[in-house]
Image 1 (cartoon, one colour):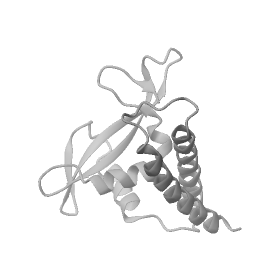
Image 2 (cartoon, rainbow, N blue to C red; image 1 turned 135 degrees about the vertical axis):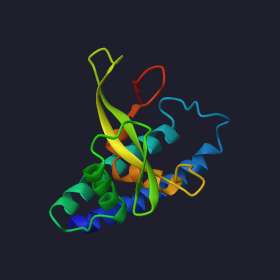
Image 3 (cartoon, helix red, strand yellow; image 1 turned 30 degrees about the vertical axis):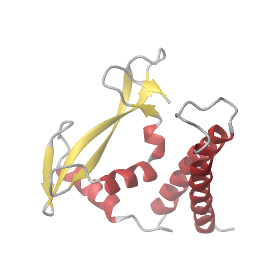
Image 4 (cartoon, rainbow, N blue to C red; image 1 turned 120 degrees about the horizontal axis):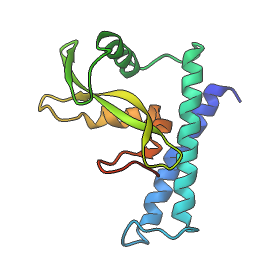
Length: 158
């Protein structure tokens, strides 16, 4: 199986897992799932497969077997054009508005302070709200950058 076929197979399995998770969620009143529950196992498989697929995407794109998406190209252009933008600042590029964000990606040994952040861009729609489809694509392309939960009061591992 080629790596491109593997990506397609992973994508199909991830979509199947979403369906299985939705079907399983009707059994619970809240989001407090028992440790060994089927839904916990399905979520763990989905997260693992999503990260594996994203890493394979990046490998295939870097060696030219897959094309970069318009979103990736725009984000590279934003990084090139606005290298010193601070978190929350808005910029304009190609008639669109974007805002820079920073995601914690590495904590210190105690897990209480952030050692490293990953910068990324969110597109704003005409109402100056975050474009949710853009945001979803970022989470799909770089899921490994969102393993640490961003919290205003603290950073903790998922």
